[in-house]
Length: 140
Figure 1 (cartoon, rainbow, N blue to C red):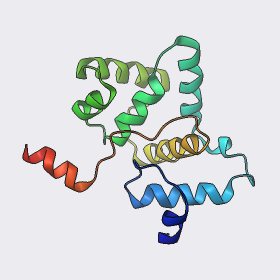
Figure 2: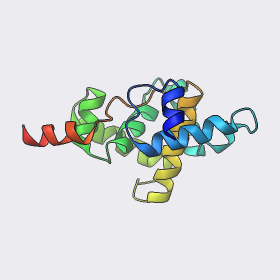
Figure 3: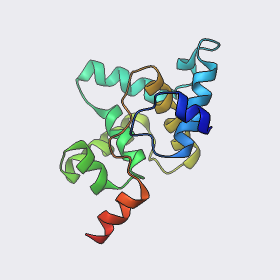
């Protein structure tokens, strides 16, 4: 893993081991399988919905889940008011008929986002912080 991290140019936002490990796995299967088949259908639906309705629900879910469903942090990362985020999440929950309470489905979404990232369809969230940055936020 360390050799992979050193030899492959990774963006500075990948801070967690599981991201690097999953991206390495995705890199190894690229070209052998259609990775889009492994993106959760809900994420594919949100991409199409966003394109048709000029919304940003995919990015909203992306940051909301990467911020561990922390409304205040996700709203800050999206540069919107927390009430706006709550409104969006409410709309998304109705669209997907899903309330983000199932860890396995959230993990499926996370894997889907990494696949979409590997295909240059979504950026990695800018909210990824090191434990030191998280601690300094708590201290201030």
